[in-house]
Image 1 (cartoon, rainbow, N blue to C red):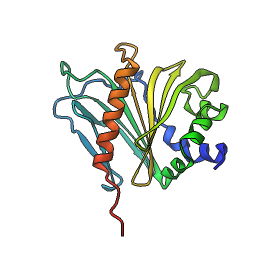
Image 2: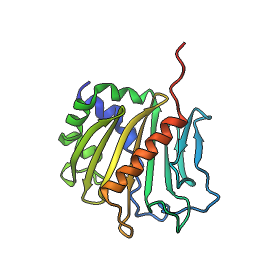
Image 3: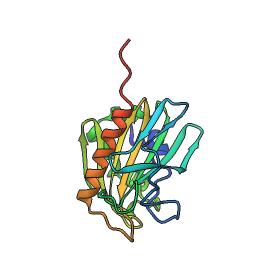
Length: 200
């Protein structure tokens, strides 16, 4: 798989990352907010880690893609104030992960990959300081000129490419170490809510 074809396959997974500027990007949700949300006729479930809730009001589902925001369930909780953005791609888009960690890393540190990651679309505006595979997920620690430093993961759920980003805001900082903890917990919750189909 070439970088160009990888970018075309992956592109939908980069849409909709909300890095905490718009009013819709909330850090704390009402206590009654759900911890899960079903998408695509109940074929995929967005699940929040402990202490966090899904924000159904900010969720968008267009055709074969969706963006869902996850925030702290309420102010004053022990959970870190953070925003988790989950972006879901089209059916079959998870096939891009078959490229493997090294090729994914090579692509996302190339000019094309950096431009895809950058909020501005300019390769010079983003730096990938870490890129690794963990439990089958591809993780990156990024520093974006417009969005600061945050963790992003790429995984596959039910054949769909899913990206997960964990970050703080300009008002509420979140260290990369704490962002990684939240990212990992979100990935665990997502995989538990979307177990692989039984063979046969």
